[in-house]
Image 1: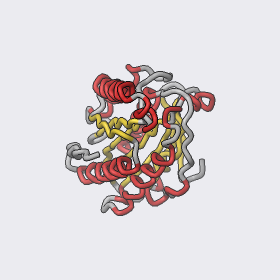
Image 2: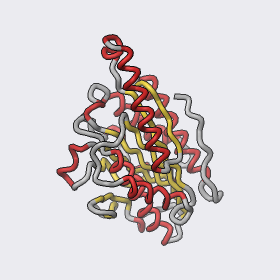
Image 3: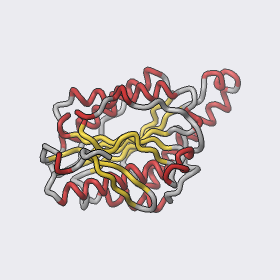
Length: 266
C-alpha cells in the first residue's frame, strides 16, 4: 500500500484496504461495497458485467454526494483461494470516488465455483471494521452493500453463521448509522440453452432465483432483487439502480435512519 491506503485484516485470513483516515477531508461518509461473482458460470457475460460496474460507479460522479463516498469493489470465485485462503479478490479498497478510474478496472474472467459466503462476509465484515475506525474518530458513517451473483453458495471458507453475525452487527446501529445489504441475482442461462431445452432452462433459472432468495432471507440481508437475464439492457438498468441507491443512502446520512429502498425496475 502507498501512504493514501492502509491494510486491515479481520476474521481468519480476510483482508481489505481503506483510505488513510487522516487524509479524509469530509466529516461524514457513505461506505459502498460492490461484490461481483466471478465463478465459471459467468463465462460469456464478463464484458456485460464489466460495463455494468463501470456505469454504476461512473454515475456516482454526478451525485451531489460524490465527495462523501468511499467505495470498495471486490470479486469472488474459488480461483482466488490460493492467494489468501478465501475466495475473494479486492479490486480496490475503500477509497474516495475522486481517486477511482473506472477505466482501470480489470477484465473479469469467469472460473471456479461460487464462494458466496466469502463474498458477503468480506463485504460486510470489512465495512463493519472500517466504519468502526471512522466512528471512533467522530465521523458520521452509513453504508450500502451490493452483492451480484448468478448462483448459490458452494465453495466458501466463511460459514453461514459468520455471515449472519456480521450482517446482524451491521444493522443494529452499533457500528454504522444504517446499512443496507442488497443481494442481486442475475440469470446466465444462454439463449442457446433456452432454444435447445426451454423446460430445463426455466428450471435452472427458477432454482438459482430461489437459492439466492433463500440465502438473502437466511443470512439477514436487507433485500433481494432478481434482475433476470444478464442482457446489456438489463445490466444497464441494474447499474442505474445501484447508483440511485448509493445516492439515496448518502442523502439519508445524518438523519438517524436508513435510506428508503429504491424500487428496482430491472
